Image (cartoon, rainbow, N blue to C red; front, side, top):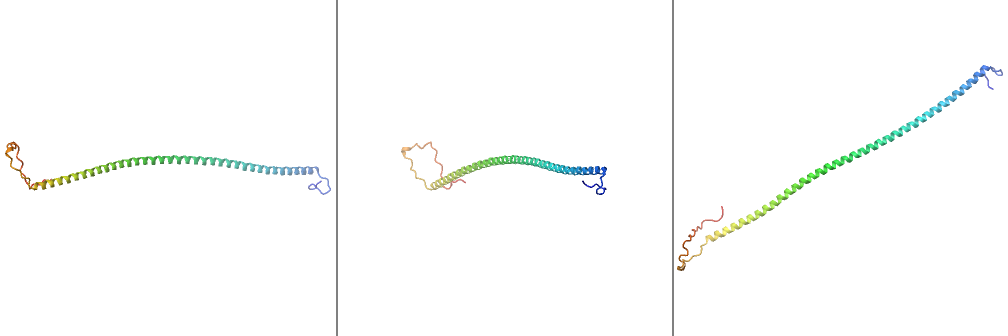
Length: 179
């Protein structure tokens, strides 16, 4: 056996001391076992905490992914709606500009047609004026020439000219051109 504390070698151990030593060994074993159990428990708690933290992080990441996915979906919906509104606005502006442009084209075509008509009327009017001028010059030239000599009425025609008005006196110095 082992030596007891305070007894010389070869002496018989005191039963109280032996009991004390046994209790001390038992206490040491219990303390060592408790320390191992506490160490194991600390590792288990640490492992459980690490596992739970990982679960919480994974759950938070899944939630964050869902939130991010929802944000992307909402921003996509907003962007689509905004593009639709902008396209509708642009289409309305284009429609209104087209209407205004069509109206302006119609007015321009009407003005052009009227100008063509006015040009045709002016051309015809100038042609008429030119022909009237030519006729007036011709009449003026003819009026300046001596007229044919008429014979005296023959005795056979006596009385035929009675009752007719006499011709107006000719004045060669009067122009036929309008002023």
